[in-house]
Amino acid sequence: LFLPIRCRVLWTVQCCATLGYFSMINFSVSIDTSMLLSYFGFSCLCLLSLAGAFRSEKHDRAAFVAEKQVVELSVWGKGMQAVSESLCDMVLKTTPDLRIIGAGSREESVFGRIDGLCFTELVSGEDHSRFMAALSTASLTGLPTCLPVTLNKKNEIGDIKPAESQ
Image 1 (cartoon, rainbow, N blue to C red):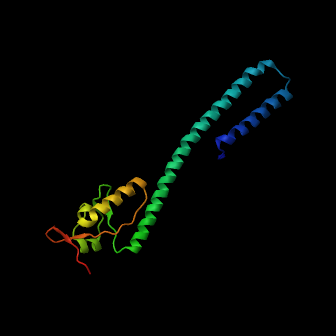
Image 2 (cartoon, one colour):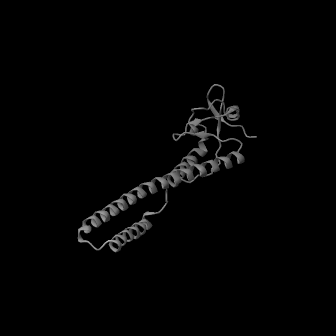
Image 3 (cartoon, rainbow, N blue to C red):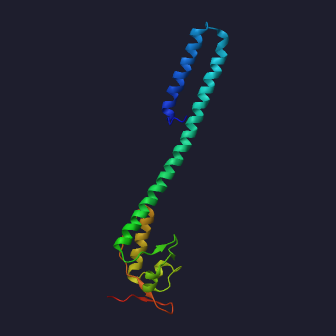
């Protein structure tokens, strides 16, 4: 039997059970002073189990909160990815050090072979400082940001040149 009872309520269950046990023993059998030691031992075991339950709940609660935050962030990230993929022509995924990963055929048809290239190498010179400032703000706050930037195209030789305006 598993009862999900929080520790702040658990002491009432143990106290009621212990007092019920003590009173049943005392009323069914005459009050005996030799039983005081066993009552004391039983009470100590109850307190010890409460301390263990409190410590266990504290640990389980911390793990639950951490897991909940990870799930919320991953759901938020997936939602942002779905929104950006529906609103943008293409989405470039990067590693934490801004290396492009998972570039598909659509991205490679526009920019050439860019897997492993640092994303900042594609950002045009005028937008580079704005992009780095927005990236630093997003890193500090932990919130996603939207920033339109002009990207440069790679030619067949590997040199980077400004993308043509259409």
